[in-house]
Image (cartoon, rainbow, N blue to C red):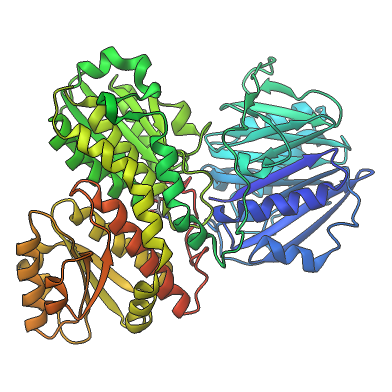
Length: 609
Ligand code: AGP
C-alpha cells in the first residue's frame, strides 16, 4: 500500500520519479505528489488520483532538480484530498518527506509536537515525520542525526524518503517493515518501493533491511547506517536482471488483459528446468537446502490472503492427493490469532505474489516463534516474504501490475503442483501424467486465448446483473471462490463462491431469474453431481453460465450459456478454468466502463494489517 520513489543525480530526476510513480501505481492511486529540490529550494506538486496527473501540473521534462521524492497514496489516515496527499512538509517548507506505511504512535507524537508549537495541515499519521525531522534539526543536530532521531521516535511500519534544505543534493531514506530498495546506476541513485521502478535502468539493487537508513548523494556510494546505533551497515547489491521484464501494456488496453495473455508464458517459465517427465523427476532447486527438514514434515499449513489463499486451497488438494501429507489452508490474518497445537514437524508454506502482504508476514512471524520450517511461494524476488522464509519456490510470473491477480495465480497453482509432486514418493503414479500435462498446458492456454469471443459475448450478456453465485466441486471449488473474487474486485458486482453441494443448504434460496450462477462444469469425477445442481438452479429459473470441457455437449443442454475450455487433468483443469473466469471478470468490467487495472478502494500490495 502506497508506493514511493526518489532519485538523486539523474539528468531528469522529476521525470524519473514521476515515471517511477506511474510504474508503482498498482500500490495506490488515491493521490500522488512529488517534492523537488534544486539549489536547496524545495517545490512540492500534488494531485488527486493517478500520478500521471502530475504531468498536467508541471513540465516534468523541463524541470531541473538535483533530488526528487514522490508518493502514490492508498488512503489510511484521512480521506482522499490535497492536504492528505504526500509529500508532507514542515511548516516552513524546507523539509519534505514521503512515507509508505503506518505510524502507530502518531497521535502521541502529534500531541507532543503540538505542545512544542508545531501545527499540522493534514489528518495523516505521516505528517509527524517532517515535523520531527525539523524538531531535531532545530535542536542543533546534523541532518543525518536529526533524521535518525526522528526515525527513532516512530512506532509502526514505514519506508521513508526525505529532503532537507540543510543538506541540499542529499536524499535520506529509511525502512522498517515496509519495502525499500536502492538502485545504483553510476552517477545516480534511485530509492523505491519495488525494483520495477529500475526496469531497464539498473542491473543491481540493494535491498535495505529493517532499521537501515541511508544518505544518498550523486557520485558517492550509498552510506547505509543503522537507525538504532548509527553504526555502518554493509548490504551487498544483488543482481536484478532476472527479476525484471519490461513493464508496459504493449498492444493491450489494460494490464489485466496483458497479464492474462501472459499466462501461457508464465506457466512455461514456472515449469522450465523443474519438471522432467522422461525421468519422472521434479527438481525444485529452491527447496534443496531444506530437503532433510522437509522429509520430516508430517503436516503442512498454508498461509496466504485473497487470490493467493485460493491458490492455497487448490494446493491443499494437490498435496494431499499426490503427496499424502495432511494440509490445512488458513487466511494469514486468522492464522495469527489461533491457538492450535502445532508440533515441530509442521511446515508452513506462505504464498504471496507481492511478497509484502502484512498479514502473511505476520503469519510467518508466528511460524518463526513456533520454530516451524517456513517455505515461500513468492513472485517478487527480494521481497520480505522471499527473504523471511527458510527456502522456497519462485513463481516466475514477472511483474504483475493490475491490482487483480491473474498470471501470478496460475503460476502459484503450477508451482503448488510441482511442490506436491516433489513431496510425493517417487513411485507415485500421478506424477508422470501430471508433468506431461504441465508441459502441454501452455499450448492449451494459447489455444484458449486465440479465441475469446464466447467469453466476451457472455460478459456482454451478463454484465448488468447485480449478483452472482459461482459454484464448483472438488478442484473446481477453489476456482469458484477465485472466480467470484475476481468479478467483485474489478466489476463491483456482488459475487459469492460456493461448493456446488452447498447450494441446497442455503444459497438456493436466493436464486430467481435475476440471480445468475456461473457453474464450473468441466469434466471431473463430480460432474454428474454438479449437473444436478445446475438442473436445480434452472428449475428455479436461475440463469446458468457454465464452463464446460470442449467436446462435452451435455452441459449446453442444461445451462443457458456455455464457455468451452480445453480438456485437462482434473488436477490441472483449475489453471485453464481460472483463466476463463479472469477473462469473464475482465470483460464484464470493461462492459461497465470501469477502471479495470485499479479498482476502487484496493491496492496491489497490502502492507497494512
Ligand atoms: C487478488 O486479485 C487480490 N488483489 C488480492 O486478493 C491479493 O491476492 C491478496 O492481497 C494477496 O496478495 P499477495 O499475493 O501479494 O500476498
